[in-house]
Image (cartoon, rainbow, N blue to C red):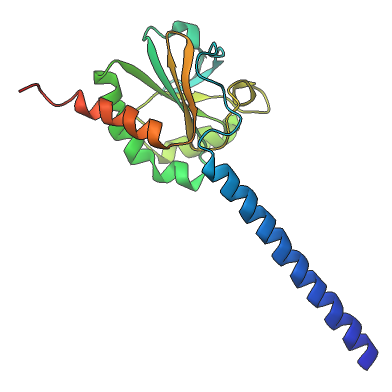
Length: 186
């Protein structure tokens, strides 16, 4: 009986050590990713990939192509209804939509959820920006844009990438310029 308890105790100790080491490595990996603002994303100057997907409208899903965008400046927000950070930022995205439009930017939300998830959950949230549905199982948008995670974004000017990555200093500068465009000159 004592021998069985010793074996069990040793097993549990190694299991705890294994879990702690796993947590440590996951934490180190997350910190390295967090330190790099744009891990393995599209680089400035690269031609922006085409987006061929569907846009969720009041009438349902309608075909969408980035070739139909007339604005020179486009910002894609990569989003998921299963991402709590994305959901928390919806009021912020809605506020920015008007600023972006006034500053001459087309702001689009590309949702990387499966179509059924989008159709179910989109009813519970109000998104002012157009919602483009591009499920990774059926659409290469996530891979083509090398989306590092969500929420993230890609800023495009005249079909060329300006910046792709997580929200950081570039995002702060970009959105600040949108807000400043709302302030009348004195």
